[in-house]
Amino acid sequence: IKGSVRVIQPEIGATDILQQCTTCRNGGNVPERQLKMPLLKFPPSLQTSCLEVLSQLTQDQWDRPHIAVWLPRITSWRQPHNINANLYQALLDHLVKTEQLQTWHLHYVAHESLKSLKLDKCVNILDMVSVQTISMRCQNLQDISLYLCKQLSPEGIQLILWNAHYLRVLDLTYTKADDTSMAALACACPELHKLDMSGTNVTDIGLFELCGLGEAGEGCKKLSRLMIHGIQVTLFGLSYVIKALKQLRELGTDLNSGLVLYGIYHDFLLQDLPLGTLKLDYVTFSSRIVDSFPVPASYIKAVKLCPNLTGLVLRADMVPSIDEEVLQGLSLLNHLHVDEEEYRQGTFQRDIVPFLSKVGAKMESVTLSGFSDVDMLAISVHCPNVQTLSLENVQGFAQQPAQQVKDCAFENLASIVIEIPDEVPQEPLQFQLKRVLRNAPVMEVLHLWGVQCFTDDFMMDVMKKNKFILLTRLRLIECHGVTQKTIKALMNSAKYFSNVVVDECNKLKKKDLQDLRELAANRNLFFSVEEGWGKMYDNSNNEEAQWAAM
Image 1 (spheres, helix red, strand yellow):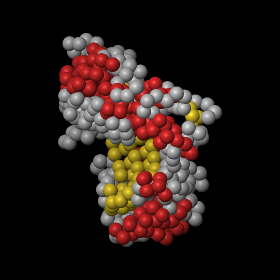
Image 2: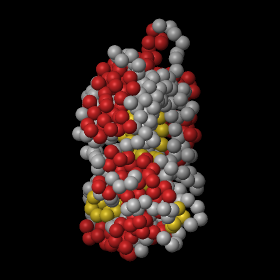
Image 3: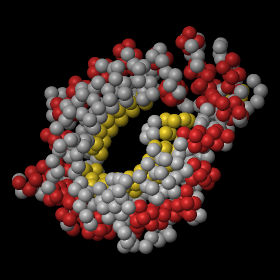
Image 4: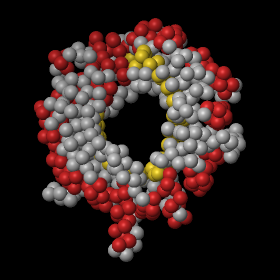
């Protein structure tokens, strides 16, 4: 075959496939899409083309002389094209990514060289026969994701884990995993570092097995990340997890981990022992459990046990209890979430601003909820490196901000979320928001709920200074002052603008959204318009039509 592709001794049945591959040879040298390239469709690479043709073969064609004999021999005219050295892994990943994986494929691609098995997009593929095949052949797996594989029984989960002695990452989210699965995991996978079992049937008993406190007696003692949202565990079980897993850094739970932490802290005090240290880097003194009782403000002292703390969730009334000794343990803090649950007046200026002045230098993410006197300009002064700012259920903004914003104040701000009730005065918000947006050149996500001051005139004034070159997503809910004029202006200015969500905005009707869709299609852009929060309205990109047009 002439051109940029040559073949060395093709095997039976390979010629037709290779001829199809050469039709895409002009795209062979196209680099992989970078993180922030213009959102245009581009031809697939040679590797992708070969894998795609192979993936479309029927089962009887896969029974021909083995694909591993000829596919790696495809070369460019100068040097061998870098088809993935692990052909089995490349094929499996492509079948999953393109959602073409069938159960029978596993008979061909299940191989000892596989390091990763991620079936997130193919949740109904596994049965007991294929699980047995994987367990017998794929004993070097290091990363397994069974996310949403609800059809797989607990016995099937045990079988797939039984020989995975080198497993380091496991995702069992929303599966039928139970306490027996944890016992099998504790015996078979001593190298496990990351585990997500949110939404499973695991209880405290399973946690004890995982910690090596059950009958198995082994345990996954190297766990550094554990996600257990939405499972039936108690504070008692959570306490054992924190104390037994000495390498644990990330712990995701709906329970109040700060309350558990204080229990451990209190034990040290009762026994008059020197305070030990934990590797936990995230602690929450809030709970997602309904009717849970707030912990006393003094419990904040328990964070002394966590010198590596980078994320903290707490109530506003706990902030005054943070003394200098506690502050020393917050030197690495970069994610902060503070809730004003009682909607008290003046707490932002009185308590939060002084606290931010002490810990804000390294702050990357700030979430404030329920405050009535928010001053975004003060946040910019004390948190100069903030990248994500979320203001949720805000009851009001400071009438006269204490600080004047500098030109470089929000130069790192990539995402801002503002959600306010209808009765909140708009003038103070307009004053602050205009200065925030004018000085945020790397803004990527703008989410506004109930912000009536966000109008066409407002944005035209803002865009005189900030063109929002990096903006990708705009979410507007109950913002009645904006029209499609602003969105079109952003489409003309923002190179990466690809998604707009509109819900109950009086001046943005279905026809306006349809016009935006057509405009995006005419410009050959990846662009989606959604009407209703999370409800897809239209996706202007048709990949097949766009590829044909090019």
